[in-house]
Length: 510
Image (cartoon, rainbow, N blue to C red):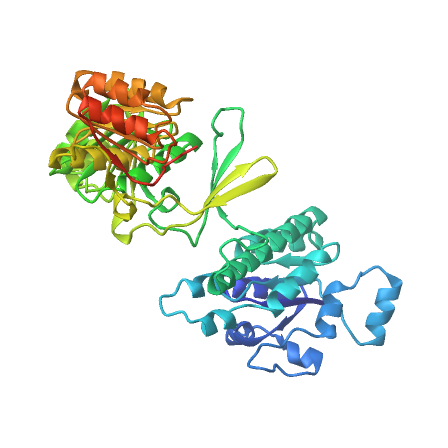
């Protein structure tokens, strides 16, 4: 009689799977809760302890770690030497293994989790059986996902055994599964030990969806989610309406929510190609969006908009009159949803803003490696703000400086943002020199630059940016400082009557 070993934490479908294995002539071996579930369903099952001749010990920590189990899993079924050893030691081969692991991931997400509880949910016997069976997939069918029960049973019914290609696929899935499991344990214990940048880094993500293509149609792409990551994320967003997201949509949407979370007052952000093209704040979300729209009525076309308040009917009416790819908000009123879903292709997403952001390390792939860093969460509250000119900013200028500073850290470097206290007026992004970025931002702002503020993501290497700002009518500047020629810029600002503030914090964004 062929043998199948069943030991699962996730018992979805296991009873039906076991019934069919019995009908196909398999003897079932099992342990603990799985054995109890099968017995309760009236399915004949043999305890692993009856096979090993050894009881479960140490509160169930040791039950399947035994030669009579692992010999059955690792033996070559067509090797005379292996078969002779099996006979000598009264070991029977095991042809089917169905195992999934203690729920470590869900355990460490519990609010009442303790280190002791987490450690007790580190499975030892399960991964050992899975790895042994997957290694020996030439002879053993190993299943760890209930989604694979149907194909295994179908092939067993048709041919009496599964196809080698199926066993290979399932074996690869097992090793991915155990690798991810170990990665979660390693991350948890590393965090407990305070190892922020350990000597090796293993990351694990689960596929959320296949994408039609990447940045361009000739590039393949998929979207993976960190199941333990922040719920304040595009990966965890709920899509209420519209086509599925594209690779570029996801990138832009992520950029939009990273910026909008900078604001506590009602705020709206419009993004194109991962750079903000318009940011507005106001007493209502409708007013905030109107400001964001007026900031750049051209670039917002086909853009992504994120708002930090519920979209009401008044805001939806304005949003609906513009071609937008995505609108992201905490929620949509019934009226707003009815108005916006009349547009077939627009994507509407909600994110639980009330949960707040769970900061994680930024990971960027380069050819042959990864760059890992902590996120740039620095704000003016963290800065050593210093007024370095003779004139200090007025209250209104301070508001404009803060808005510009919140935005400029989300603009690709070299970055300059021109803003007043309510909205951005011009954005210069991704230029090879700082004065070039300033000229783009100032040209976009036009006459509105008069009396407004300018924010720079990094210091001025020379006073030419101050001169360009003054010529456009800028009255206040915020920048990190730190150049060997800082005094030249300070002197020029004093000469031109500009208030200038140093933050001591740089906001490069590559």
